[in-house]
Length: 164
Image 1 (cartoon, rainbow, N blue to C red):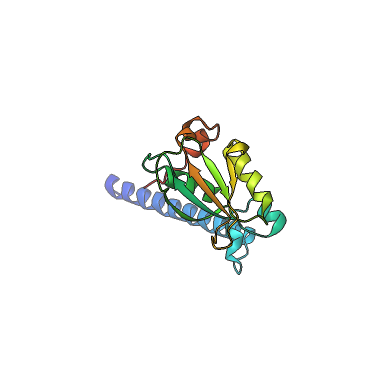
Image 2: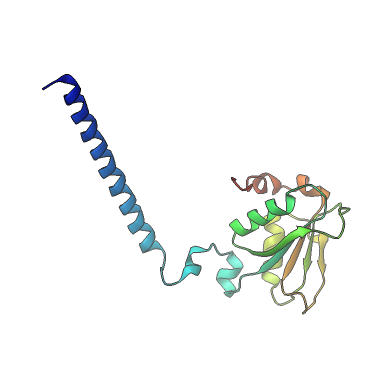
């Protein structure tokens, strides 16, 4: 048998073995995930906050850019969603002159969430405002001020840029 033919056979055997191992790995991962999550309940795939686990309610949040730094509302939106919050709206505030990051509370029935978000983002509790309004369908509004870079949580939040 020629050396070239022998090398082709070895290469084919190597590729066949590689495909078999990759297939085995992928099928074992599929079985792992199908056992871990209930395929009939897609909400089991979503991360839950501690308050949601305790109350069964997923808080709805609006994130607004109040400092004028491009992309800051997106960054906090990604972070909060990754932490299990339902960010249903994000964009710019009415102006960019917020010196402090604020948390506006619109729903008084979900006090557990208020302190959970304050602790998560390490916002000064003095910068919370109660603006109870049944006409606003989200529970909390986070307004990012120019102090965002000084928040202890920013180092973790800054890791949540979208990869594309």
